[in-house]
Length: 119
Image (cartoon, rainbow, N blue to C red; front, side):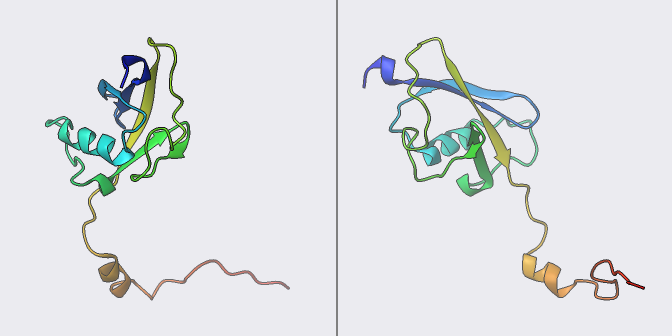
């Protein structure tokens, strides 16, 4: 793979800090990028992702799918070697309990919504 085919990508975390930039080929999968993010996650930050399913990558307003390559995801192969692509990283916060527990313990004494009266 020629160096001209590589794309510089940095990952912007929610607090404004960055991971990278690093060079990736257009055949790199989104899942492999997420694995790299998890391995380079800053140790001083709380609630870091545990699996690639805890991470969402956003580029140009679009959430990227794990199984797709960068080329398939619509990432332009940058011809200008000085250009840098920034992807936003969202991390799903850890879930305290299961959804089924929340549904079982739902308070039914409160009204379900608003009501209207037409006179």
